[in-house]
Length: 304
Image (cartoon, rainbow, N blue to C red):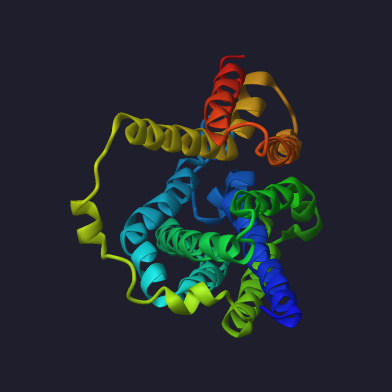
């Protein structure tokens, strides 16, 4: 590949990584101000004067439902038709999610758009992850860790961004819709970039070389190790979502922390430290060791 081609792919990778920077905001933003969203969607106040945020948690859960709906066909579509198409679907759906949540007058509408957000996440995962791995093919592990790095940076900055974008509606309610609309507009710009920027040759060569989902399942053998990996993926993701969406409520209601929003910054800083340490050690320590070490650390902190 020519030097110009390599330079263009570097620019492409930056744009692809930035899709996950905005995703980091999208995955965290509803958990950051649940009472305000609950009030906007018509929730009733509890006897102690606090807002019932259960409907917001339900909307957040719809993100997972959207992923569950789309994962069976987003992966095969990415393999068969290329990373570009999958990435384009992902950024368009994410733009719709952000705009829709800002517009939503009720929980039902917000729930529908959250499903679209989950679909967006699924298509980004199956398009962007392999694309950056194919661009940085000499270090695919580092390439995928870069995605986590951009997510962590976004989540670390989110409390400060929310403070800068806060507004008060005519009804006297706190609103961060400026941030939702801003992220939606950024995703529309990213749609143009993903559509125009070059992708690796593997993008064009992928068509027709992968077996379909049904054929793949027929040949799949679930060993003890593969089942253990699935369970680790489930518990790690579940713990991450629990922290992201409920830890601040726990800190405020059970520990008495008046303003726990900074917890998100601390959490993301820990993620960044782990990413840097992992990137430095992966060449000397087998990857599987980290699959044991990090869940043990997580378990210990949860117990504490």
